[in-house]
Image (cartoon, rainbow, N blue to C red):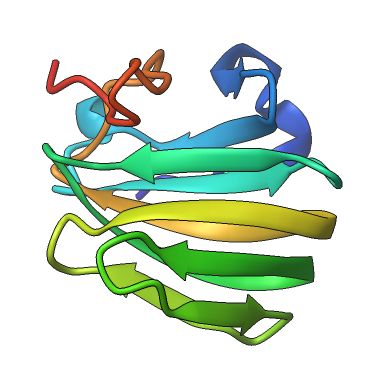
Length: 124
């Protein structure tokens, strides 16, 4: 059994210019997926394209706009919203209010990953 608390995640926190991610579960935990408590900062725009991972995102706080770059569709995300990048969707997240979400990745992240120039996490 694995039991953790968000307040104990200092050594599992990864920061980038537009976000901060507390890595609750990682590949070494053996669950087959990773789980993250992530905050994207108000006023930021993050382009992402997870070519090596599938991701599901559940909003628990804040407000953002999600744009699917293949179709141009725009979605409003507020608490209770979920989106799943089931086709490695190239997208942009524009944050209106600090956006806190729980993210799940498959395959699981190792821990230190951040977005490359192509918007993807490397497959470690």
